[in-house]
Image 1 (cartoon, rainbow, N blue to C red):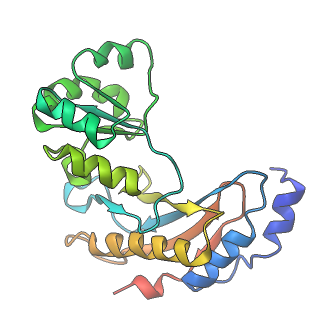
Image 2 (tube, rainbow, N blue to C red):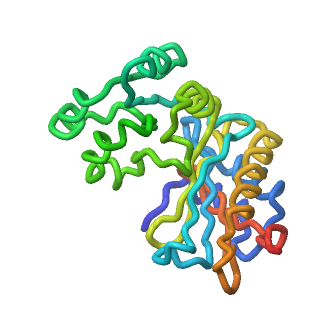
Length: 231
């Protein structure tokens, strides 16, 4: 794959054989984010778990201390008083049954997170096939199936992100934007790592965290030393 000149120059800053201390990795990723737009900085955490086993699943959510730098659109499925509550709390879209055809048939996905009250999960469940593959299905572990819609919306707007294993047992999460200063990116990264270390499945035998790589949208990967997070 041919890389652009900017990428090649940025890649020279990174020693691929080095496992960097988290603070140094953050500094390098920020320095190598040279695209003309405000790149997202992401962490890619390769785990030693086997997500095919129910007792080795990793899924949860964490509020980043400094947010994600992205404006997040929230859709809330609710009824009665909870609809009004969701609107007051700042949900971008609220509704119920009537939204099903709009999403299913009109391919409407102008939202980033879906919150639902428990009594609406029967309705939302019908969207499993379309919401599931996009990672948009509400989930109690992520705090997106709840009667406290105000808290859910406030947390999401404040920078709450969900983490989960992909099919290859890697967790991909944003830690902020390249325009953030190093301290904020480091704080956000630490908050994510604390949550993921805490989420280690008790059924796991062997190494939990195999590798951690920080990247910007268009930049090279920087490997983080996992020793700090191994217990």
